[in-house]
Length: 206
Image (cartoon, rainbow, N blue to C red; front, side, top):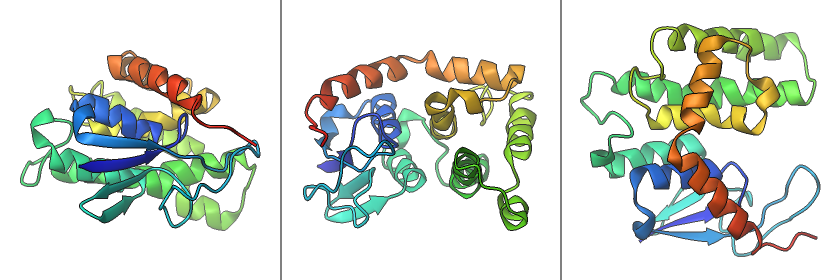
């Protein structure tokens, strides 16, 4: 049995959404834990084995897998028949891996620095900024409706997630706006929102 440590309405929600897309609810034990949130609520949960007290954390046969892009790659490789990501040997595999890595290496740092109102030449040179990030997404989505082409994949699921949390960060670009709408129109988005709403009642914030 796979075990996912999850806190509702957090970064781990996208992993729950992937579970829905893969249709593997019965194969994963989802354990609800508390985390420290930006508004000051929550806190360390001794039931959460993540060494930093964060989510998501996936445990499979005693092995811990952390970081969303690593977990997404692990699950799409473990359940290839769902078609949520190109498998090894597929010509599109490299592109898929690149989008997953780009999220952690560029997208999240750019959005976090922007939210914290941080600006420095080293940050700009390393991660670029919102205009560069937007241009990269737009260039891809002007060619096809999804990042990998005509089919929704786990790369879209990961990359669209910050724009569902911080809608003001979404660029006023028709291709990007259409992509966000297509991703959020999928049934998994609504099902996970309902799942999180129910599970949130299990957590008591201080």
